[in-house]
Amino acid sequence: MKFGIRELLFVILLVAIPAGAQLWVFKPANDHVEKQRKAIEIKEAKLVNLQKAMVGIKDLNDEVYKLKAAVAFFENKLPPRHEIHKVLKKVTEIAALHGLETKLFETLKQKPFSSYSEQPIQMKVKGDFAGFYQFLLEVEKMPRITKINSMELERDIKNIGVMDATFTISIYFDNQVSKSG
Image 1: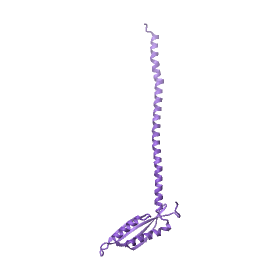
Image 2: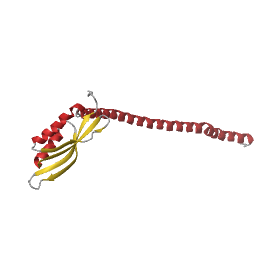
Image 3: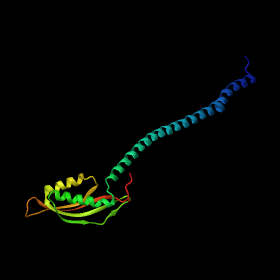
Image 4: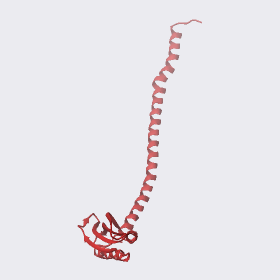
């Protein structure tokens, strides 16, 4: 067989067609497919994140509901401003019930907050320690929110078991004119 220019051009053409197809058809198509695959992976990742966020939103809605219930619970423990004297009376009754002599009962400056106020009261009582301890336990069990901010205990040197207690008790009350249910 004779190998001339015509055959050489034929062989070059046979080699050039697959090379050209690879260069101008398959490579761009493969690049396009790879870009599409990466775009799909990114969208799938976003979808997974969105699904996780949706679960978080449901959990967040449950949490908001629980927090609203807690706020309502504590708001119900806040007496209206016009009933604070009843809470103060109850505190002095508890002190007397446990044999404590009230030596000082002084209301301090109110501390207003957004929807409630704090009424600090400086108290000084005298009596035995067991009675004072029972007083603290009963104040803690009161249906209203109270807090003892500071406390000093001093024993009476002359009488064993007798002590003086000076403390600041805060009573919280609702700032609203009427309670909303």
